[in-house]
Length: 225
Image (tube, rainbow, N blue to C red; front, side, top):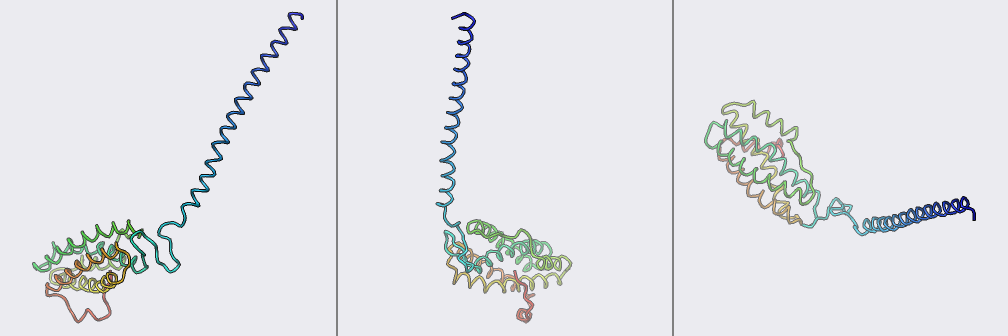
């Protein structure tokens, strides 16, 4: 074979070998990618199916399942009310400590601060554990009560503080008892047990101020938490 022709054949043979090697590498990478992709896709579908119903799913009657027991709409309302109570009664208590004109009013303010500081810590934990969203600011009505207190002075302040807070605590007291007696959720019952003690203490010290108008407690204008 002539040298020129031999070089041409050999050159073609080297080029063919390079093309064949490249083809084999690409094919191997493609096969590896497919082998990896298929299990991931299958795992994704299987994982979603295995997860089952989400925790806390509504049973159709408003009752949510939790690891601490069923959570009813009334349970959730109670948890939210405890949180809302602290959002306006804590600042009201701090204010009374500073502006109350009698030792009894200032003492009542101190009890409100101590009690709702504790309940606020507890209710935030309960809300997280059972999946209840909680407010971060008082309602418009509660803000209105705080504005009334801010505008009052002297004995007018003492009377307004004692009656606003006494009505609010009286309103929630019956709900606390109902929840403690009937809730099937252990976290909510625990919160209600402590709330029962705190609310009763607050009712007592507010009445001890001597400014509570008991006739007005049943006039249908009770504030609520």
